Length: 115
Length: 120
Image (cartoon, rainbow over all chains, first blue to last red; front, side):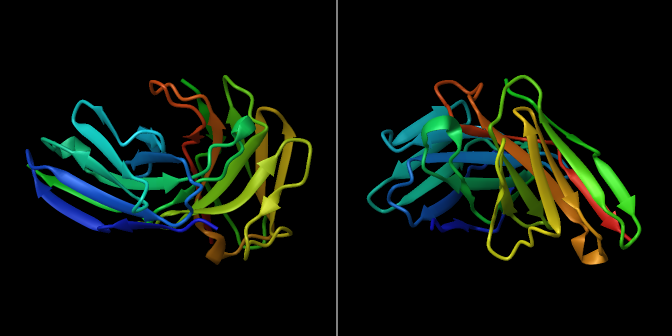
């Protein structure tokens, strides 16, 4: 089955700095890579995702890059703000018909942005 | 966007009792739902896949007689923790795949708000 490794487990930055979180996956058939943000005691929320036919995707201050050959993908947050502080999870899955695929999550990265 | 609700949000029970947690997709149909368990500062651990109209598929190491799953309709899945013990205390989250509100994305997971279970 799929195995997703995520690093670092904790990331502490100063407000305004950039933050990068990296994930690797093992199943070359995985083709969908979402990133979730989970604030303390709340549900994970999708913040950005990328499919295997795209190498990079950007939405304002967040971007995701994908290297299919190396089987790794990264989340980039620029100009970090204190409200970016949360736990971020990457995931990998095969997008199947009927939407019944099963994502494998990374262990999570606790991002702390200091004002 | 798609919304998934979960009830109750928090429950405290005595050891030996059973607790039922409901997961509902509010504005879309979900033939499949997923149940996760999350320990403090840890990742989401998939417990089982709930399939409407058929038996749930449990992950290795998850006791199906302990964690009963019923997916009776296209919008409701329930997880019952039977004969709960303190070690079952955890944060339980359900999710359902659906069309994402995020531009050009599909097949994303929509999570419920979670249920904090404390077994005394």
